Image (tube, rainbow, N blue to C red):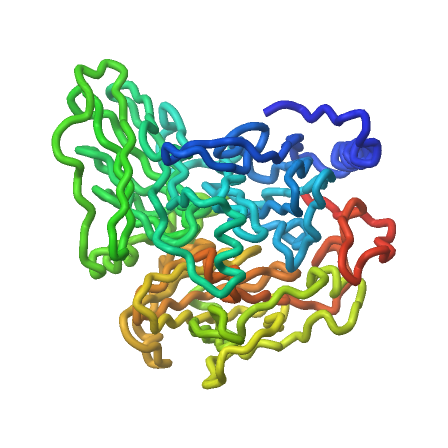
Length: 551
């Protein structure tokens, strides 16, 4: 990481950053950090076959963002690809500022040869997250990287500082070019089983170096396209300490299921005989099990990896049981000094129940996916810009029902209207034979229940209303349901999507419009002065106010 040195030919971006620097220096005490990223194509060979990858500053995976609670991140992204590009920030809440969320419903793509400066604040957040390219099937080519948000020095952390802290990005991978994969979906097809699994961009040879006797933190994120993965290390146990910004009960596991889009932090201790050990990642619940290995290397290793590769647990019930053990550490501090258990979510009145049922089908002979029968179709203008500039005809609030219907799948720009500060229950039902994974931008939610079968109102009696984990990505097991509680305390337009990228691309997503008629900056920031405009918002007047910052 280094301070950004703007190119001489980018006078507008330079002026924006200088002005922004002055604003932050005078209006906020929180530090700010500059990044300059150049997004290019490059030749990579993660599976032993050369293919075109998406690199950031010539890196695959991309550079890691390291920050501290409340830091302001100024990330100037230069798009040197041959097509539009966007980056989104999985788990970063962008409070009061969905303009910066980096998905097409909120942000105009960066045209080829142009740049855009994201202004993010990791307000009241800690934990392990990642960023990724959100358009098309770019994610199948790279462009992703880790994000870590450390606690401020005065905030206690519920474990001793580790000797080192490693980001471990795991995910399934295709040898096929992302444009060919996109064409396959555009032509009505489905994606095949991936070709393999990567650990930090490598199908083999990924290595973590450790010193005997020390304890290390691993931040594990599944940045893949469709498969749940199991992570394990030969002869080493893992102590879970954090999930997507929440300190957890410190349960010990020999392996961990990481579903698509999810992030976990574990501690491992180098307490085994001095040699090398397998790091193993394998696909879960797939007709063919994909497996890759890396190496945990002791500094005084007496020999290479040996012995059988440790096997993954097989039954679905094992994964179900593990998921139920992942709970909040109520006495630990989060981003603020007060204990995480101070907020009694189980005592808040639920004002609305939303039930979302996924489905698959065809529209005009092509494969599509839907939520409550609505298959999302992008509009010609980002929804948030249509809201801000009051452009009619881009979308209709309430264009998707908050309950399942018997209607056939239909195309629509799906927007669910919701009130600011409402406390809602969302039930995800999955009647298919796959594990699904769902992510909600701009929010964390409490995972209050998950069970086999069909959700009923009387199943609320089994909800965990005490120490449910708070996170932003959740799995829904086959022929099962998962229920969450979420406080809609972040005004804006927020993407709720399947993390299975084929499904997301072909319609299994929607936007939640968290709405208030207030125009106060206490509730939502103004549009950034450097905002890209496109579609029917092209040429609109942005006004004079810059997105603000809050201590």
